Length: 107
Image 1: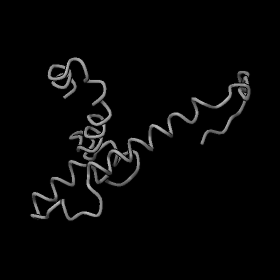
Image 2: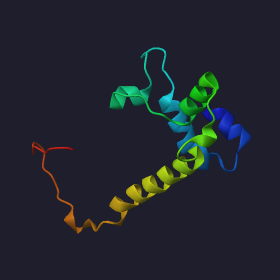
Image 3: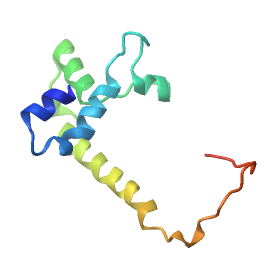
Image 4: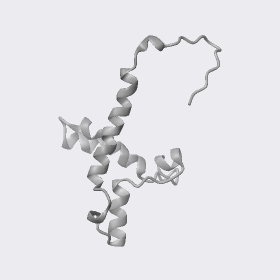
């Protein structure tokens, strides 16, 4: 999937990478019998591929959905960009050095 993306869009493949990774993470992995998202969160994600699949199987119109799929994905992308920028903009003077053997709690 990544190879075909790089072959088709050699100059801009990296901008589409988050969407390809999202699609990969929602597809069933044959050896796991579940998707990586199912494995991590314990539930299925209703991503663009599953929305299209259910619309094909049940004959529903995606235009009647509460929010357009593209608008939803774009709003999620903006939220993720904001969330990623938060730690990058924090001051680094609160960094604490840890010694070997120090017990820490990760959330």
